[in-house]
Image (tube, rainbow, N blue to C red; front, side):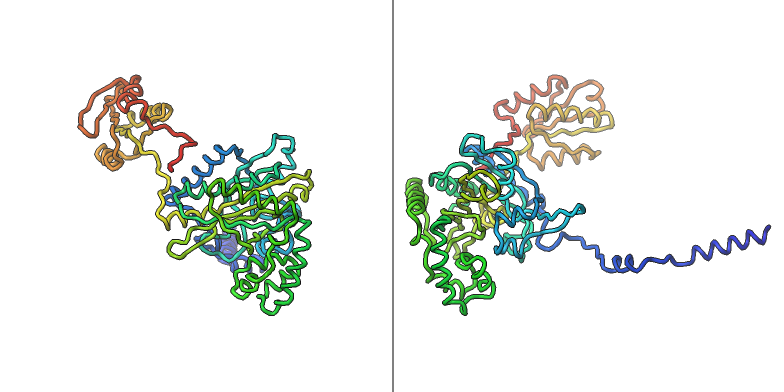
Length: 469
């Protein structure tokens, strides 16, 4: 019996020492998988110190959306990939090179949205918004994804603001969109900007212009970059927007779309320029401006930062897309909209030293000492917050001295002190930080007393629509 036990122990030891066999596929996976403490290339964290700029962009754009009658809409980050293929267009860089496309476990081919307008149009059709009073004005803000070479202000995950208007074809809506885009940018403290406009016509006049352009570009084929030689077959208008120097020189002498507009498009563009003149919005006509998406018709525009320090960058743009709703299966619906890149707006804000959002400053600090006081302070803090009194605290700090140092650093006007005795007596010590004078007040009268001391009309209350401009 003892021998059997000894053998069993020996065999157990051998099993413990024997290395576990890992399948070859698991070994390969473990070798290939690397743990890296950073996000994927072209994506970044937005840290707390940056959020003040982001808050300012959100507040200014949301206020203007409200003032101009736009309603908020949010669409999914992921849509069926063919939505973007059909709307943005095959032959565009976005569809051919930049979309994050993958198959779900159920076999659906989906994509991370590369822009916001297609999803908004899909939602417009799906939810029957065509029955709403026209124009239907929608505002959106959120991330988009493009697998492109990361560059300053254009990450693989970047954020956009979108304003879209459906149901009206009058050029006054185009002018209003340019006005709103300019107001957003100027509201952020970016005063120097340049509006560039062009008309690329409609499907009727663009066909004739396209033939003329292709004939010209064919004669210059040898001078085009490799990408533009491919675009010549698929999307010749995009050659006008190429940033390669040799292609830029070819585009400078190319036929201009505004010289070949049909009567309807010519009148529409003329009216747009008159509206912009009426708004005193300075602009330049840029014949090379076409935008990178297939769905645009008639008006296209971009807004660039000013020429201070000899540096310019595009902050956003948009235009009219009268055929997109019909292309996606809806009723014929004229539409116009624009998008602004938030990262580029923030870069420009910093460059011109524009003021970021200023968080409301707390005027009251709540200090507590002892276990019972700590328990009571949670409810007291909640009562102050519910009554709109912006109060700071330092829960978790045991020393009253260290809490008062925090109050000094924040520059509050009043510090409330709750100790064991006060917790039992249901009182609070109210200390004026400027004079050092203290008084003891009943806890149930505290809110009214604090409001009077702060002069109730100046009490800091959170307002979602408040904006620092």
